[in-house]
Length: 358
Figure 1 (tube, rainbow, N blue to C red):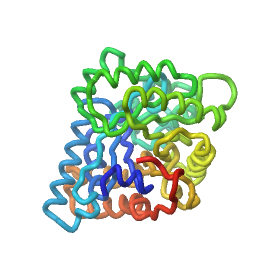
Figure 2 (cartoon, rainbow, N blue to C red; figure 1 turned 30 degrees about the vertical axis):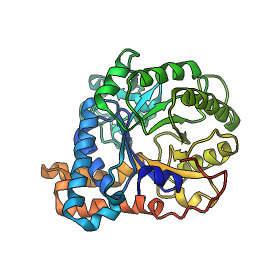
Figure 3 (cartoon, helix red, strand yellow; figure 1 turned 30 degrees about the horizontal axis):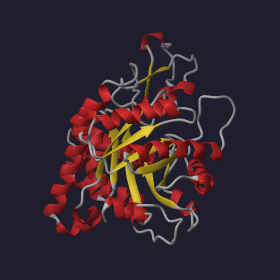
Figure 4 (cartoon, rainbow, N blue to C red; figure 1 turned 60 degrees about the vertical axis):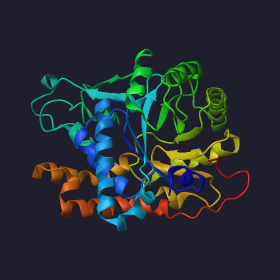
């Protein structure tokens, strides 16, 4: 099924590798295996090395489907997933990395930061492995001495057009916040200046904002309408990624409820375009959706990685990529299908004007 058709039928599945993830070996394996089980889109950092790793993984999946025709139905009838890159229009947790000076750690510290890190970016000694860190932030409150800081990555305005022209993605996602309309407009103009023809321009936003007090679903919808006007003027087709609880899909069912609740609250006020779940999504997300939810699809990040993490570790210990080890690969594909297939097989029940726009 082509990605656009998957969006129209509510069966869209996106793999989020991480906007600040530069673990190239893991990215290549994740993209290879999730491409093979039929994801429609793969979202990676706007970085040449990360994009190259993703494309190598996708090419491996295509080669596998050519050698084994029985896999083609699982790989969107031979159509490759879209490659999406993520940008931000200001500080955003998806674009941060943790860091600390291990020389300041007490010699008897039990390293709770290591235990809570889902990316395995903190070992038994030393500091944070920057390539593996994708900014979830769980290590910071775990440190009893408050030694862990963070730094943000924001591409300069001048760098974006040339970078996108080099990467040639199929889609771009801009992570924004309530109250950042001007910053979003500036970033959008930089995307437009790249001249890259995009299948979709995704907008990722949740209830987090820079002002005081909690934001409401009505406020978020108003912000999306503002972004919609800009996208329409620029000639881009929107995809709305509703970020329920950022980077928490591997935590538990409660995070899935937050993502579904945000979609249900925003949908009555949302502008035209497909609405996609994100932020806290996991294997419980689909069962929580009512038949008339209006969800065009889902993005899996933390849960998609954590499912395969033990196998990635085992493959690394053996000294070869996960995708090249038959026994581990079979286990990984079974796990990946268990996450993706329920969405790929979902029956779209909605009809009429409320169905998501293709």
